Image 1 (cartoon, helix red, strand yellow):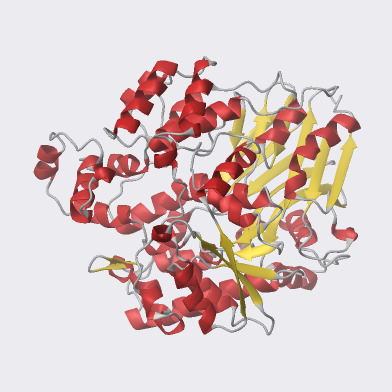
Image 2: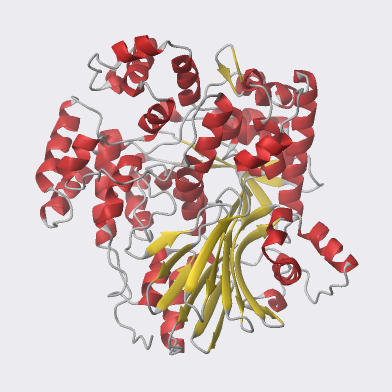
Length: 623
């Protein structure tokens, strides 16, 4: 796991070594173990390394083979199998790294080699002979890759902070047209970016820049819906057979992610179903102890899941259970530190507690449970949309005309609260309903903030009718998972030089589960049915029967009173990007309990803090 940064200057002038290293310095937290640069003929390749596979300096980057040089962030879990296949074709290797495997596979087969890779990655390969640059990103978007392209510079990297420093502070200007997306979803989905001329490369895609023509082309090498169509069979396995196959596939995914490492691998153990399954499987791989990290909230018993985590740890003696105590004061103190490292506005408040936990992990690698909800239908959204799909159109049309409850989360009764939330997000169109569940601001609120949606704007969601649970899960995997959940994991972990590996996002596992009948995933309103039943014997019964509990920051409370609300109002009063009167109006409504606007207020807070981010202003740029 590492950080990469590069640039190509059309006129060949390039950038000075001091400026290049200064920009690369912004990625030190991603790779504290080694730094490498390559500078020639208007081309800069830079790399910060977190050494995990083949710790020898011979595997440092940039790595060169013939006319090709690579800078790469990620891990290829099946690199040994790919290397063996390449050796049979006459390819020789001088390292034991997955980096060299990726470079030589690409040299031999080009883009088509990506289809054989199982892992998480973002990389750039420069061909000095053909004068072409290729960028690529993994299938589901676990690793970020961002770029800027204008008439004279193509710059790219793992974080916009480094890209901005490399390009120069005057070249990258904040793009206000991206703000409606950010405030609506609390993140910027790819290809949207916070700067004019900048983009995020989409998951499962590659981009090639022809330097002599100064033209780029982009395409997709992995398309989940197409894969599912090709793999779909006439008959599905029985439920019992599906349980056995799931057990086998997930066990292998965990083993692959542990064995593809030359340093110790730990696990997150929240006490929920997803992480408990991963921890139980990890404890059975190899003879060594595995450190399991859990969180306890000693001052907030309502949110404390550490007791459930202990039940799992007690069952497996080789789990070295480490409990991290979290308090509200500690999170508040940690907030500024975390937000100051953001290269782009990102408004999912769970970033803060996730980063706090990551900061306490001693190992370089940890296994996480992210991705399970999107694959096994774990979110309440999925059940709600299943109910909605069964309703006749005329009934939806009537219900959507009835005014909604302004603050459903304030309702004490769980059934009434759920009904109010269901009604609030109900739409006649399934796609519009999905977007309503994923949105934290409506058009009127965006208009009031001064960032109105434009009528011609298209949401970056691939056009598809959501007609089944499978369609809904695929939409979430393509849209919300990479832009929100996976971005959170990457940002939170890499701020603390930690690599998080996600066994649930093994591509073969994902494709297998999504081709199963919907009734295997949600049965009688019980979500994650298949996952629960497949691993029932490995877990305490209290874990198998638990409902999902989120890992959240207390922003509802923070935005009602206290320092953070006051700071937001102070920040809004000394800027012109957002309407200060609208922010105060939203803050007053939230404080009065009229409406829960905590997510929108937090997004405003994060954005205004991001506008005041430290930037590299004192280096000389020769490009």
